[in-house]
Length: 299
Image (cartoon, rainbow, N blue to C red; front, side):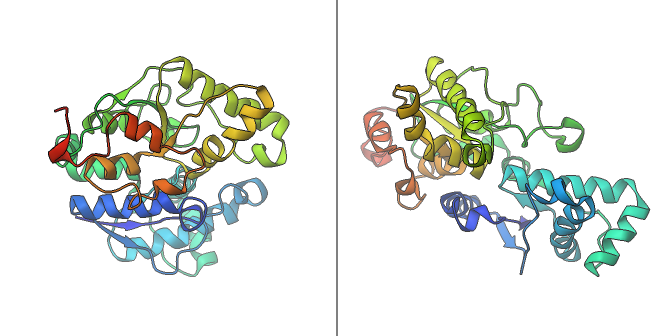
């Protein structure tokens, strides 16, 4: 099976481990990710705050290239997914908007291809049972707070693939890997996005509440599918611990990193060594890195 792949700007910079692990996992499963040639920034999260047409035209160019190849588009970044999905919907709902966009990008985009979040694309291509069959190193006894953030599943009339208040799509993947998703209250709360930089007085308390609730509900780690959410929860964690005089030491993972580890890849292969919060004590303490042939426990 083959998807067009739109990595977006973050996956070539701050979220490079998401890019590396997503490509490795897809290849391991037998999925071809065809990276859209000469893709451009989708404009998230600035364009739709400044110019509506620009916010549609930027994603439309990428979608048009994929559509020309007859491919649906898999998108790992939650913000990019949201913007590409918004453009697809705008083109499908209005022929006038479609004509305007096509004149701007000087390409034909008809809105015939689907835009899928990467987690949705993987399960659509292989099913949870197929993913489970690939697991050689089950993530036994790992309790994970799966964090979707505010853009992956909302607004539901746009995203259309999971419950907006209690999503389960990534939880189901984590369960297939042998880990235990915890019940917690902040899985779709906003992490503050860029406010952690521009308005830390607003952003940092939002991140603190997410980490606190995950910890209070017994999570060993937080799992996300968004590079900006990952950055806030991982890179800002030490700053928050110092600000509020508390200790979380809560490792953050992309769901594709955990898939790769469960499939038998090394932490280095998955880019886990790039994290700010060191996840190695957790992984070693749970005996999750030993070669499957020498594991003490069976899943």
